[in-house]
Image (cartoon, rainbow, N blue to C red; front, side, top):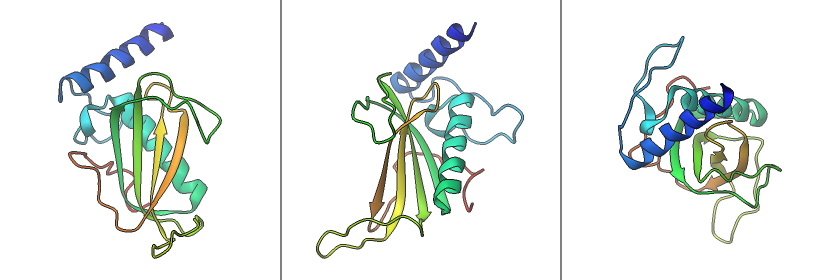
Length: 151
């Protein structure tokens, strides 16, 4: 049964990539919100979990959290886990990250304004975490996770 659930999750992800808005699912046990970028209820829950975990780990204050599905794989991970499903769940967190520092490039800011997490869309296993400095724009055509904004 678990294998069937994973296959259905992969089929839903493929459907979301092939046809925008192919299906819609409500978040079970939560206040319904717009279905971000064609994600399933399970993928939205995984994105929320990833966002909350990173917020707690970094001590961040997030003004916007955006989940997206996109084609790709991560073979060179900085988390110790690879993602070879062919589809990635990207969670972009925009806000302040007071405990995260980077070496600035000449003439650029070292202040981190966003963190981007790539994860397996079935398991939520994080496989790549990066940061962005400078001016940050939310991803285009994406619906924010209302439940984690202003955390």
